[in-house]
Length: 336
Image (cartoon, rainbow, N blue to C red; front, side, top):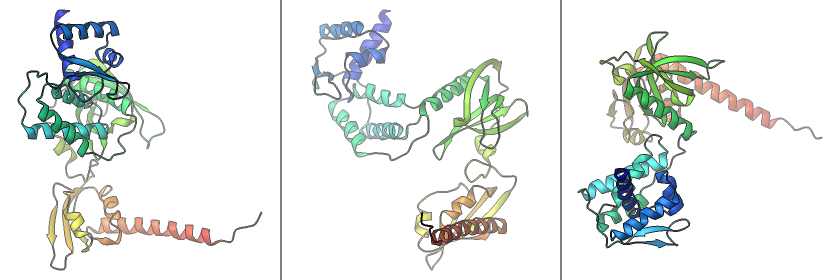
């Protein structure tokens, strides 16, 4: 009991030195205790000589603060480490990455133990850097799924789950052995061994409806590699065979293509006329064809012929849809 209370008191001091506003209600909710215990902890802090006060204008509805003159023993962080911590926690806050929300609490706890100069550095860095993102859908449900998968992986236990794919009429019950969880282009994925089909498959976490960790050990594959599983996929979906791709970008698009690393096999050849030749080896064409389309007329597929035909067909279908829409718009409207 005393150990838990001491731990809570140390956390309380760290929180009240941070940038977040904490009143008795919020502190009670954070520590899963009663307001009476919060007031008792505050009284112990006062007896210990910790100079805190209540600021009614601090944050939403006021909160307790510890005077800046109070110095708490701290972990030795460099200014660059403080800056990186601020930017990383800001990224997590704005992106809404489930399972990493506690990083922001770690920042606030560390902040309360740092000298005033480094506290100011973290606060300013958090305000100067921002991330614009639509985030991921239903963060609460996605977090619960991630927590269950985390439990499964750490305990090396199999899972039972219901999975709904948009390509199938009904949801399926599965028994899986998770291998890896990864984030790609704002979407969480799971690679797992399907116990019924006896093969590794790819799943989107958002499509899991529920997960139950079984008291059944996994068959660990010590040689499993996510990079080998994905192969040369453009993003996450690996095709049946590899293709050598060559795409020519005009002078307007060339510097934009050069600014990013698109694929781990890519090679770029800058030409004297300002155009750019993009080369890569990709598994399957389903994902890369949509990437090519987003460049419009500024990109021309040179190889393979299969990709060129796919892009041409899709571009033709898009053009035809707009032509139909234009003809529809030009039809005289009947008066009522």
